[in-house]
Length: 282
Ligand SMILES: [Zn+2]
Image (cartoon, rainbow, N blue to C red; front, side, top):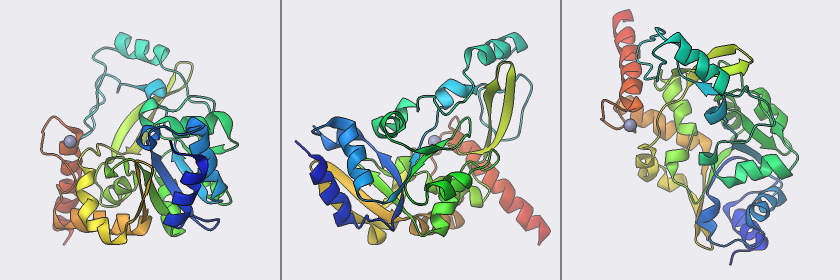
């Protein structure tokens, strides 16, 4: 049985304090049985006094397929085959609001914060974030509809860190920021904004299922403790960005799979087009 004070103790051992700014990626079940459940984990995170940023995407409800015929290069998107099919998807989707639940794949902890703790939430219909603590407003303000990963960029400027609670780098969104800085993994996606109104949103990242291969490169910069059965890790975000950049500069296909049916393949080709354009301009 893990208690709130065990979690506070573990987070403090990682170095979290009132001057810390972290993006939290988490798995509640990684803690085994927590006395007080998800709320105790959230309370422990807040007790450190750190500024917390949490993913709060609700694309499962707001997302729609691409409209028929809208074919951007290397966009790897599911498109509706007819307009009636598209219109039906739009009517089925729910427009974004700050009250929408967070996608289940992001775990219980962000949704518990949304339901029970005072927070700020950004308004991107596919990739919103929650933030709490002294620098919350600054992180939330850094997101734009055309630049969804802005809060991670702001976190890097503030020398923030990535906190992985029982999860691997396959959920480490900061790696997408390095990809996007190099022109890779920049997809266009579609969301419902209001009744009968939809929008195309640029710079939505792609797949991350191979991101754990960054782990050896980050080992020297990683602090790690066990909180009960949960492997808790803290890595400076600038180290994550630098390691990802270095890997991609050395190999455009780094951190991607080689399945031509995966979005990884389209992401790679976006990067290759950037390299080809740079080659031409020299
Ligand atoms: Zn893939």
